Amino acid sequence: MATERPILFLDSGIGGIPYCRHFLQRNPGESIVYLADRQHFPYGRREKEELVAILRALVGRLIRTFNPKIAVIACNTATIAALSELRESFPGLPFVGTVPAVKPAALTSKTGKIGLLGTELTIRQPYIRELAAHFGGGEIVGIAAPELVEFIENRIHLATAEEKTEMVRGYLEQFRADGLDTLVLGCTHFLFLLEDFRRESSPDITVFDSVEGITHRIEALDAEAAHPENPPRGRLILTGTGEPEASWTSWADSLGFDLSLLEER
Image 1 (cartoon, rainbow, N blue to C red):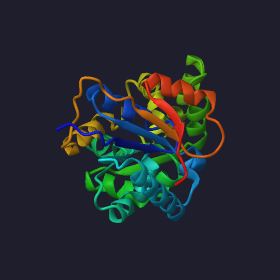
Image 2: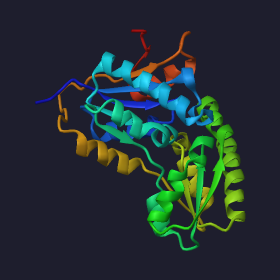
Image 3: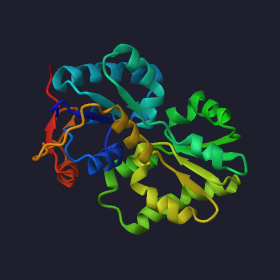
């Protein structure tokens, strides 16, 4: 029987939209709530304990408000910092995390060096290096790119093709200098430049992302898959006060979602 309980996608900003869009293209009958936590953007510059506290409080509010059937933490930083704590705090809600695609990169690399482009918090976490070592990978060459997160969040909808290419090339030059042959995009925001990274990295560096895998994982957990004749409109919801910036209206329109602020409860 179809259900109106939504699937929740949560990110600090627009980074989770590629995951949400990919899932919705394959599952157009699902009810979706996308939460952009603009009040606490960016997550990557926060300490782990602070981010865990923010996410616990936020997920608690979202459960009370929307009663989601699945929660997708559509942010690599939030997943690495807080996924286990969220599962412990809310055992009745299935969570899907977006872990950087280190496994396929480790299995593919011939040089033993894996590039990781991410936030400061993601780069610092030992989990990434432990994951690479588990799958036979060697050295993780990490570059924190907070300015790229800011660029994508605030300018990607206005940026020219030349600006995007210039941003991508700067990071690839650093990775090439380290002699690696694989690159993991370790922040969901970077997926907005996925094709740019792949074009500029070819043929010597292979770029990895986790979009397909995350969609398959959500589908596997979704025992209440909905297929109504008239699919419900999704909702894009913002934290913080003040009217949504014009860019958020554009993002909501591109998804076919209604836009609103998260109500205090």
